[in-house]
Amino acid sequence: MKIKAKETPRFYHYLYLIIIVILVLWIGIFSRNSFWHTHQLQRKVETMEREAENLKAINDSLAKENTRLKTDPEAAEKAAREQYGLTKPGEKVFRFVPAKEDQ
Image (tube, rainbow, N blue to C red; front, side, top):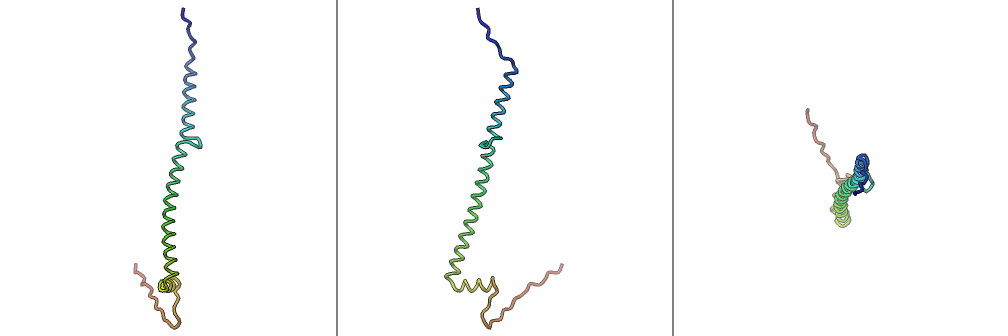
């Protein structure tokens, strides 16, 4: 004689399936260490690395310009004349204003 095991109702099978789906969604999408959150953080890191590279290039060019202005008197004079409009004593400066375009 065989003893028949009690079968679990289908309701419990569906309940277990729903719980497993919820756990997988929580781990995959909604938790702090989820794949989605990790992907977003990785994109932010890549963006910040590109920005850091751009800022480093700008910083290097400014450092070269600073060194050039400190060591080359002609470059310092040119920068003073162009950027700040400085002149030597007794020197006349003519500034030409571009003509307005007729519309």
